[in-house]
Amino acid sequence: MAIDLNALQNVLFVREGHLAVVTVNRPTKMNALDDVTIAELDAVFAAIDADADIGAVIVTGAGEKAFVAGADIGVLSKQGVLDGKDNALRGQALTLRIENCKKPVLAAINGFALGGGLELALACDMRFASKTAKLGLPEVSLGIIPGYGGTQRLARLCGTGTALQMILTGDQITADEALRVGLVNGVTEPADLLAHCKAVAAKIVSRGPQALALAKQAVRRGVHMPMADGLALEADLFGMISSTAEMKEGMAAFLEKRKASWLRA
Image 1: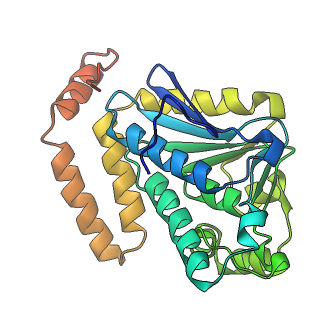
Image 2 (image 1 turned 180 degrees about the vertical axis):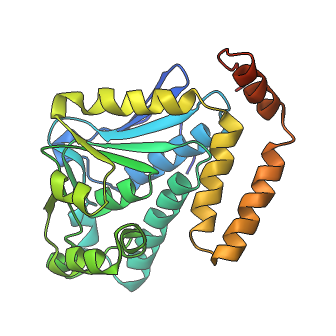
């Protein structure tokens, strides 16, 4: 399905300099993920990945109640084996698109991040939460399991014990508890959340764009490898960045005590 980025229904896509802000915009539905929203998010992130002028991305939800409060239960209630698997694969394709984006992606969790919403946040590189946010994977309370990568990413991020407790009980946790278990990188007052994420993103954007992409690749790929293979990957990527004009500019700027001028486009 071709998506016109100038006629999005459920997603807002705004550029602020080298920063992209992507907002799931279904506040009357608690920003729940339906097929249209998933397709639009996928198209937006494909465009972001291809745009050299964008240096970082923030994902958030419209309104004050929800980041993304899960998938559309009305749709899930009617699915069978084949369409259930297809639904999971669509959600997984989106979260892989976000995870593999060359640009650093930050989640600004401004409210409920439940089910598919938490899975969306888990695909991001960093997560910051409002103090009022609640996070969870409540699928077992509906007689299903997480299907958009939650069983895999949560365990890798927080360990199997924390992941199994959250998944098997279906309980929601507070932002402070999410910080304690390593699920989020920081917690802010609700009014400060987006500004905090923009400040972090601005610092990221001030760094070398190719270095950012390769550093993200080193971590994302290396975490699934044995240490020796991860170190070999790191050395290969270090060699790649050492041949670039970006490296020469970064080193020259440091030695000349000036701000580096990165070429993005």
